[in-house]
Length: 101
Image (cartoon, rainbow, N blue to C red; front, side, top):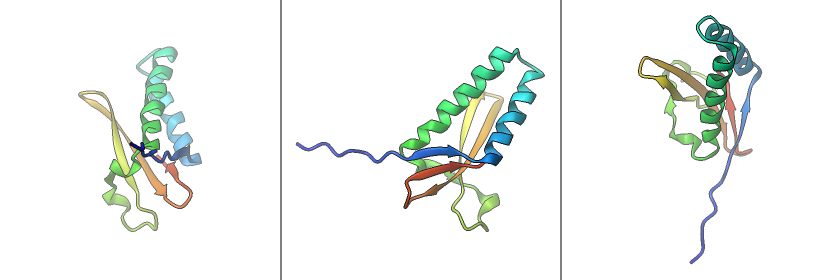
């Protein structure tokens, strides 16, 4: 029996996504220690990295339907009351997921 190898996409954070990360760290710094803030962002990065496999699983972002790219999002739920929306689009030809926010 032959095992099918699943395609893995490269996940890249755009410049605008890095700005959002900086803003998130600043916001978290108001409520948490530096170490805890960095831990939360690390978990966020790990979750975004899961887009390497099956990036199409995200929900289409209705606010961006007018754009050329097919924007999607997944939710990183840190707690029951707190979630962060990860917005991205997929370049199928290059097998790259661009996280934009």
